[in-house]
Image (cartoon, rainbow, N blue to C red):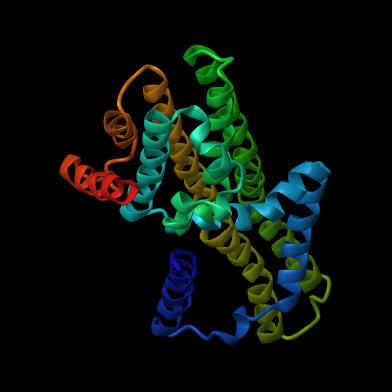
Length: 288
C-alpha cells in the first residue's frame, strides 16, 4: 500500500506543483518519449543481466510480498510456534514433532498460527532445521554454520533484483538526455519553421530529460530500495529462528530460547519481555 501511495505523492507533487505555477500539462504528454526512454531502459536491463537475474527480478515482487505484513503480532506468532515445537520436543521427545514438520498443514500447532503456516520461507526454515535437530547427527556449531550459509545465500539472491533495478534507475536520466538530444536534432533539422513552432519542438525535446530523471529517481530507484529493505526484513526473520533454535540446542528451556529470538528483532517490531511472556504463557496453556 505504501508503494502506490508514494508514487501518487510523487506524481501529485511534481505535476500539481507545475500546474499551480501556471504550467500547461499538455506539452508534458509525450508518449514517444516513454517509448524511447522505457525501451532503452528495458533493453539495458536485459543486456546487463543473465536469464537467472531477470527471472529473479520478475519473481521478487511475489517473494517479498509476505514480508510487507510482518508486524509485532507476526513475530509473536512465530516465536509462539517455535516455543510450542520446542516444548513438545522437551516434554515428549525429539521425534514428537516429526509429524508437525512433515505435514505442517495437518499440524495443530501450525494451524493455530496461520501467518506462519502461510509464509513458505518461515515454514521451510523451521521445518528443515528441526528435521536436522531430530536426526541428532549435528552439533550446534555445525548447524549454526549451515544456517548462516543459507541466510547468506538468501541475502545474495535478494540483492540481485535490487541491484538490477537500481542500475536501471541510475541509467534513466542518461536515457532521458538521449531522448532530449534526439528531439533537439529533430527540431534543428527543420530550422525553417516559424519561431513558435521551433520553441514548441524544443520544449517537447526537453521533456525527455524530465521524464528520464522522474522515472529513475521517482519510481525505479525507490522500488529497488524497497526490495532491499524487504530482503533485510526477511533475513532478520531467519536470524530470529536461527538464534532461537541454537539457544535450544545449547540447553536453554523453550521459554528462554524464545527470549533469544526476541532480542534479535528490530526494535520497531520487537515485543516487550512481558508481552512475549504473556503470549508464551497463553501458548503454554494451549499446548497443555
